[in-house]
Image 1 (cartoon, rainbow, N blue to C red):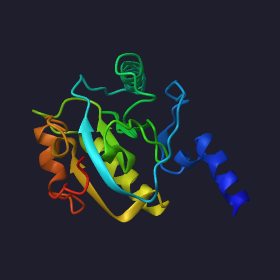
Image 2: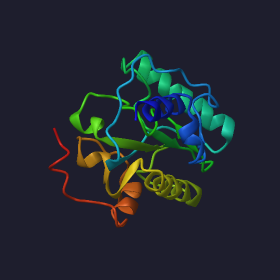
Image 3: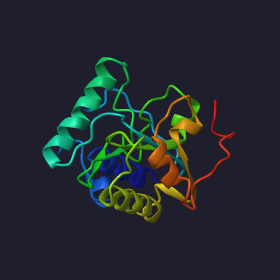
Length: 191
């Protein structure tokens, strides 16, 4: 058992476990390695959907630059130990590794220790995400269940259900409310 745990931790820390979900690794977008790591208890039962409320991105280079900028802001201005999102989805339809399946991104609220946060790059108050982005999140969530990262009965909520924010934006929030995994009851997740 100890050998299995050691092998698992080595694979997790090298990013190998993200390869199966077609995620652009932190190394590939030139991200900074976290200085502190806290592990999530898996399988995860809560997925929080949010948006960056920034300009979007449509190319690989622009999306990688946007993710680096978000990480810099989280590290240098907000003093987080890593980028706050578990994954980010660009307008190019690619999923970018944040803190990933295994690590707590930001421990400032209790729900962050029992959830992953998937962030759509862009502002979705007046426009909907494109079909590439929606296909990417569906594939990521399926992969998460298939690989034991997500519970098969996981729930999806909008960030606005947990905090006073407009995230994930009106248009994206309207979309996720129609997903079968969406829940209106967040009482067990709030601080």
